[in-house]
Image (cartoon, rainbow over the protein chains, first blue to last red):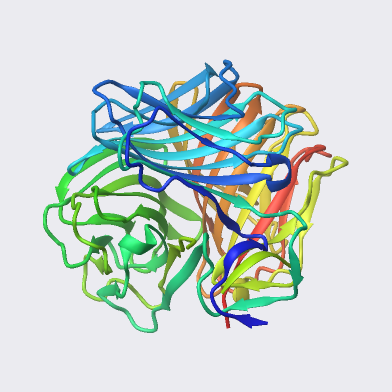
Length: 362
Length: 182
């Protein structure tokens, strides 16, 4: 059945919003997401843009059922400026969301929680931390556990280690998979409009001819809030794929990278750049597979997380890169994204570019 | 259209990723689980999420596409193990789902995003937390992956262990496909 926009609870196997804090109008110490049923919903996707409200190092956590015991562990890998690092901890008091040591700077993170009881609960994380201007202090990826096998997760409590540490403008979005067999039963639905409360593809192109740049226009970042960009890019030798917003090619972009290339782990930081790198290829016709999630609403500097497998040929993958990015612009509505190759006609035939938007419920 | 709760029993085509396979939690150990009936050329992209519980000592979890057992799977790893960050590159007859051997009862949690359409070698991005027991996660892995096959339609994905019955009770595998409106 063809339908228009769907705005309700859709049990169709997709991730759909269960909680959205909106941008906070006042600082808080904690936020509670209640009414969950981890045993039925199984997994949660969590997106956090957090602003440190206090002049102190603030740890941001999320606790299932507000369990404050030392029942959590993590293993991280990270990049800070040019240093790589790794940490293991087996006695945390919550899942780590992010850490921030500079007042009014931003963290952006995404997390996937396997919530069903019966086994230790597991949590995968990707964070860009302590972001201000065009500087990102830290990019990290975590694997985490909650050593509780029995309790159904009925709530998630997000909290700061410092009083009122979750600052004005912070936003937390939780998506669940609506798996229960409830509601009106339908056959197939072919949605011609928007699917509210979920990520929906709004742009796709497969290049039939090489291009130097691809512009995705007609966007409204202030309405959409979140975008996901997924690209399979085919490039020239020593190709670099660059992302810019609107028409801004000024020195307004920054990033923090951690990467693995052959047997070398490395990190680097870029500030005052004129673009955000979303991919590279080292030789002609190599492939880069890249995935970026953005918090695009104006009001604060824009933050994003990129992961890409670069310089792929045959069974050789040249590098795996995690790059947190920032666009040092607080006021402009994002109406277009531009992907540009470093060389003429450097986005080659067969390249695929997709953009997904988060559709807010009304 | 504002709707109440809808339980979509058919296909939800909404330019979104929709779950097309769920093993449920395995009630008995297995050495492999095959997800068949796929059409990578139509779906174009898959997201595979696995919470795998080891059913045998020293189990390594793996994934194969379209039944290919050749030496066609490339990896670039970035990982953290305790206080050591590291990187490595490797070619295997499978993709790793994490890189640490799991003893019985230990688990791994993975997400793989796969660009499946033919015409070019296939590419994927993976994150795995590996060898998890109580509050200890032994390693976190980020991987770039390639499958050196440009022409075979991906009609199946197989998740397997290198040890007999290595996919233990409680393991769960889910596959999401991109479903475009028409």
